[in-house]
Image (cartoon, rainbow, N blue to C red; front, side, top):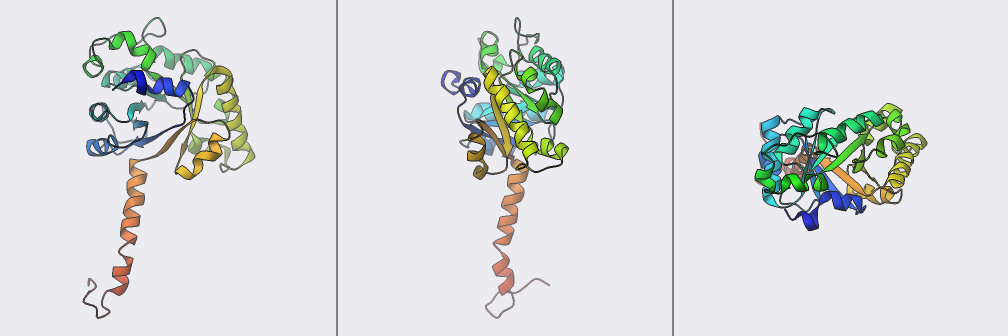
Amino acid sequence: MDTSTRCLKRRLCEREVIFGTGLSLGSLRAAELVGRTRFDFVMVDTMHGHYDKVGATDSIRSLLRAGGPTPVARVSENSAGQINDMLDAGALGIVVPMIETRAEAEAAVQACFYPPVGRRSKGSVAPVMHGADYVARANSIISLIAMIETPDAAANADDILGVPGVTACLIGASDLEFVLGTGRDSSGFLGAVDRIVAAGLSHGVAVGISISSADETNRWIDRGLSFFLASHDLAILGSAIRRYDESFTVVRAGAGDGNGVRSRS
């Protein structure tokens, strides 16, 4: 991967509008397909996805070999061990869920980066994918994306996003609206988003949000967000299968009408 021109961290810091999608099925074949797309990044999801360490590593490395979307990984918790596993796999970004305090953001920074920024252990695994100079470059090319997903976290956004080393913030829209008990058009939800965006702008931290379709993009760009996580393989496959199934309804409707098509008994 040409990190000089395609570095996700640089693009986030410059608040370029970028799009990604998620992988949750745990399928290497799905990773190979997504690796050929024009998404800017792909999130290998070990939180809600069907991935173990080996499967996540294989998918991340498949994405790297494809030379397309930048692979990032969402860990299931703010754990130095899990973060290290995904960085050693070759992920160029780490998404940490449920960050609610400054101390939690600081712990994630410590786990993500080599000294003097953090306390990540120096290993020999990631350089296999990124080259012998990986350790020297790692801190400058790895993105730490903190997820803000609750009203308490939104209230603490200034403290969280003010932690040096936090590259970006991904708003966990589904959890935030669930906890608030409202929809995404509610004043409570939009107020929380605006608070997070204001904190991001204050500290030079890009803010993104999870979306289900491209139609949602402009409304969030107008509110100051700049990157978007657009669905995941499981939802996309489910939607495509339903549409494909529906395409045969005309055949089912015409079955047995004398035109040579017989319905199944």
